Length: 274
Image 1 (cartoon, rainbow, N blue to C red):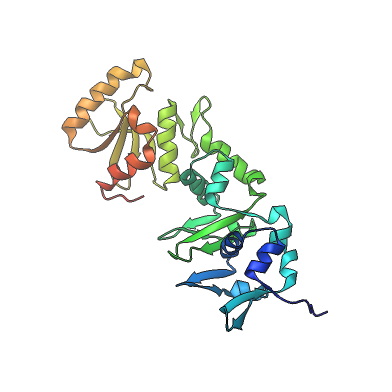
Image 2: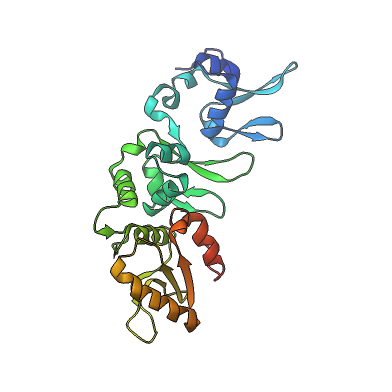
């Protein structure tokens, strides 16, 4: 049966939903129903599908109107229909946003684009919605409010933040200290193939903390997390590495809590982009 009720402007829709006009425009943009082009709001294909149309007015020019039935749409009437950004999702787990993005990528729900994040078929099946910033054209993904309760996501976050003994990493490596665990997990979530405790081609029985075989690059952690019994051997290994000419990245305790900035910069010196 046709709905003969008068359509609503976006301002009137905001009033009907108990929102400010600014909030309404922002929410409709987030939902992908409208986009900002120059100084005007335009309907997207999704917005047209939801019933949005244009109306011409001598006083106001062209503006968007919506059918009254939009006020009953599930994204406005159902609390579970609210959508979360990656930052909001990260906050719900008390994680940095970058770490949250890495978890979502590991689950196969998103892929990294040249800029921003691209929703996969798996992510779409879990309720993810692809969006694009109207000003920068950077793609991003929104998630249903219920997604923090998803068992696979909760498990992935638990694994990402696990610091239990022994120090087991997300890729299955068991390392000797929490600092090495953070390094190993960072390499794993950055998609860098790596070995742990790989023999170094030096005189003596020495093993690298980490080795990136595709780049012939060693990574050594020299901090206080090492066992006292290891320190003498590590210092001897450090002397030999300095004389060997092998490619080595050295990390200390002050680097560990800032790996997301320190390692990309050091890796870039060897032509490795993350």
